[in-house]
Image (cartoon, rainbow, N blue to C red; front, top):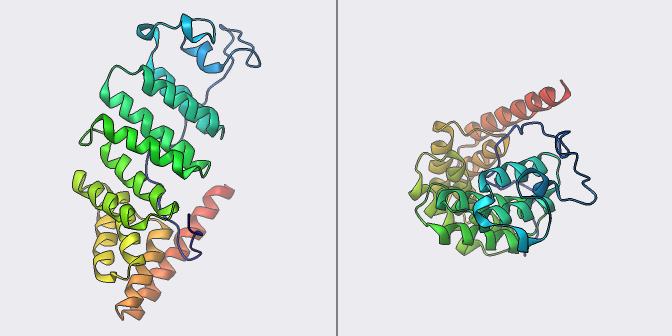
Length: 242
């Protein structure tokens, strides 16, 4: 694994909806003791943690994914990863299974467990490499591979992500960042412009765009974009304070 560069931040891609719906791990009607019973089981599974008693047809994989997202909402990413894996194992629908594996990968990435994130994204793609969540799996896999120091493979998956979904703005940003790292500034700028046209505009993207602009000699435009990035960061800080 390589050290994380100081001058930019790679996008981790999608996987979790935001904001998360509020939830209660111990709803009154269940009155489950969460020190004894896993909240996942109290919501979805019959009545015990004994896997031998679980009938696959009785498990609602979609509900398990919702519980996993609830764990994410309170930063319990280890429990989230376990829950998403359980959802994937019990899912009878390929799209649900793929979504669960993608979310498991993001949960591991939040824990900086990039080797396990890579495995989860590869599981998602093994379900259906052209599936509903395949582009998200590809761009997230690119991120995890980049963090793990496998930059060559990372770019391949970033390219695959935009091939699968040319309207996926975040995937274009990720592609541009990897191209920027390799000194392919013109191609990187095209990716950043695509991302912005598709509505993906972040301070990180703008800062990467400024780097690419400087590299091609457009210093004045680079300064303008950096000012734009700073204004966006300030606006975001004000929103957080409110």
